Figure 1 (cartoon, rainbow, N blue to C red):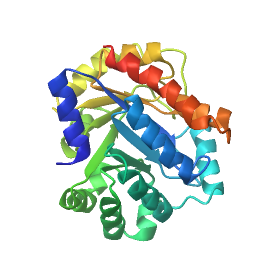
Figure 2 (tube, rainbow, N blue to C red; figure 1 turned 90 degrees about the vertical axis):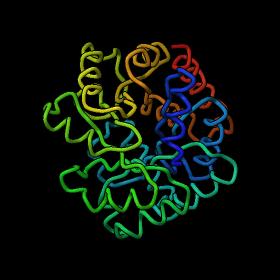
Figure 3 (cartoon, rainbow, N blue to C red; figure 1 turned 60 degrees about the vertical axis):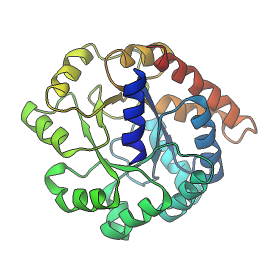
Figure 4 (cartoon, helix red, strand yellow; figure 1 turned 180 degrees about the vertical axis):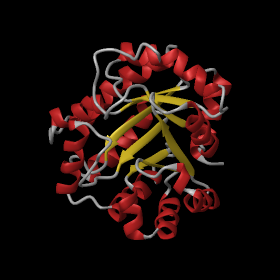
Amino acid sequence: MNRIVDQFARLKRAGQKGFVVYIGAGDPDLETTRQLALAFDRAGVDVLELGVPFSDPLADGLVNQLAAQRGLESGTTPPKLLETVAAIRRDSQIPIVLYIYFNLIHRVGLESFIAAAAAAGVDGLLVLDLPPEESERYEALMSAAGLCHIYLVAPTTPDDRMALIVRRGSGFIYYISRAGVTGMQASVAGNLASQIAKLRAHTGLPIAVGFGVSNPEQAKTVASHGDAVVVGSAIVNQIAEHGRSPTLVAQVSAFVKALADAVKSV
């Protein structure tokens, strides 16, 4: 079974909420990405999203844009990232999603990229700029490779299109809790409960809520509504602050553990 599907099934049986972490791959370098992945697994992270560095990350705010730039500067490419995923797999079975823009996949070739991702140990792709209306061949190839094709739903998504998107997705639905780009926020969206209820009317897939969750208190609030919480920018910001400090992995994983504990307390 796909690791993402298996993980959410396990969480459901245990009556627990999931914790999804996003970091920019190759920030500050791929060896640190590998070490962070293993530390996050030990800290209670259920799914790891690795942002593949891209020159035009249109869905991302400043924090994640800068992480993508640092990833590019460290020489991170899709093939090198897949080598890192394979290295992670030698020590961990944490489910891994690549957060990626379609141009990077198109450059390699759709079939070739999906096959290489599956062989490396990737469990799913979240392609930011590939709408489901244009994804028929992509979805077929992903399903054949045993990978989850994960889609985003925004607060501004019309009801009829929301129904289409969630019918086409697999693994989990990523609900963007607020309009705009990624980034830390001072508060959680006030309409979260009603929006998630609307999503649940259309799908039995787990609903992971992200964009803006910044601290344990917010993570706990979001976990009370969704099936999983996604935290990205706040963790990426910690990586930026600690830079190349020898304590980076320990410092960031301690921050992540506090978030994981908050999510698991719901």
